Length: 493
Image (cartoon, rainbow, N blue to C red; front, side, top):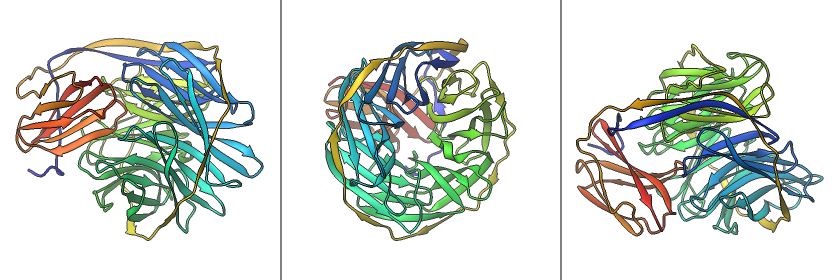
């Protein structure tokens, strides 16, 4: 068996599991919100307070708010927030951008603890006078972060800064092309390097940001990229001709395997792609042609080849704009964004079939092959960047929960406990041994943010050093033949 050619079917362990679905909106918390499921099973929602500071809401697994704060530097006039990541057991990091004066815009990054209290805040830029915007953040294997967006002097370039755990710059790169490069996306890859997508390019780098290879992308514009379990990549895009939602699948060298397009969307609101636990894909964006009103969330669930399993629209008669998509630990999905139909912050938790209990509709989407071309290209990169402390203050938000619908159902999983994974010790604090069901199996260890922390083709027993892992919950996933075996791993460091 080859480890890069695995077709998977999730083998569930005998259990009784409650699956929660709901739709909530929140008043008093700003807009443009995106959400993650946290390692304690709760939800954190971040956004901006109509341009005046960042906002963060912590909610329980049923969507009920626990606390909410805004974060603002009185010297900064206007903010946009774009992403949040968890540091398991140690709080959260939120990224965005702000106006730093006439003809100047910079990235903004804040670090808060588990209770929302500010630990530090910093601003970052290419140099004074540039527009550095669309600031996003990911967490890296070494406990640091990558802050990225685009930087414009004459035309936008992809701008990437590698930070340590305290936000200090370790290196920075500017990737320059002959085209206008907007909406970059980055994920750290299993070799500790990075895969970077922008509107028209796919770039693979090593761990220091130096380019390994680059491909131009024609006939579609891309907004997000992930590394997939087969070692290749999947991109969330929109076709250039009709703005149709588009998945582009490549191998590990960026060569096209397949490309599918679906229904028309509004790509400027963002396109979000995930690989689900069964090896298929989820892709979400915003549509104005398929749903209930002027604009609605649009979510397509596919198989491993991009074939549609189902698709849904969510919303009401007003404007709804989707800003994030994640798969949850109960195999459901979490979507979030803005809405003026209910309140400005809109959060949807679905079951594994995309149903949330209200304000959703099954869409008869059509899939077609997309004429996407990837070709080798030369891209230059250079260094540059600075950081500055920010005088950020914290204010409590007055949040009102608006429960649109809620349901909790109990599902009994299929019984099959043969060939279960054996992890010992579990919890672990230095090393963990994993007994695999077969010597040709392929192992991944994934944290609750979806970051792959370890990958290896197996032997019967693997000993893995977890001393550098953060304390928290991880999932050991083993692909063997036509099966996937999943066990929870607890790391206590």
